[in-house]
Length: 210
Image (tube, rainbow, N blue to C red; front, side, top):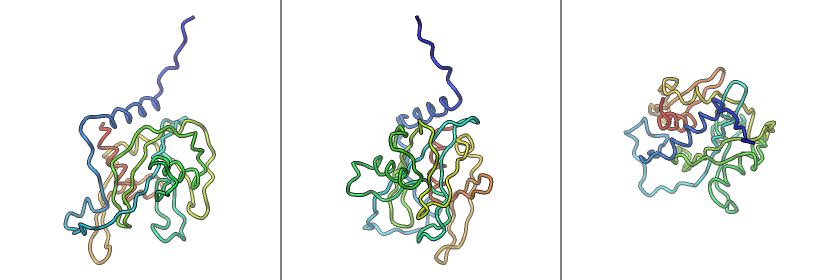
């Protein structure tokens, strides 16, 4: 008897598109918090700490969506901001993918076995001295988020199609350390997604294309 295959869903097609984008011959450039501020002079001998974040995509009745967090308001760095689950690499992490999976499990309760790695996005340098490697993954099993109250105030999802549309992004600016700093934003409902998170997402949107 011929085995029947499940018809491809829009989520399947979006994830396949992500996989294809990551295997294109032209390498995507690294990014940084300074991309829109070309006059910034950075020390050539600066030491950046390695970190990783999980760019987790999952299926939903409305289509593919991406999981994000709202950071706790008492944190020292970026309190209350929208972020991917992730953090600094530990000595016990086998690689940066392991870092992203560990941090996602600790921050939002995502079991490591529930995420299938799709690929690695270009590294991103932050103003806080990290070089962050985004690990793109498909969340293959249903899970109920369990945010760590010490780090995460909320876990929510945004339609992937919204974040892959460059037209949804805009550039804003504010005074930072006495000078204007420009950055990407990609708002969704009540969530103001900006800074490094928006820059990484904009790079993904540019990579995937229309």
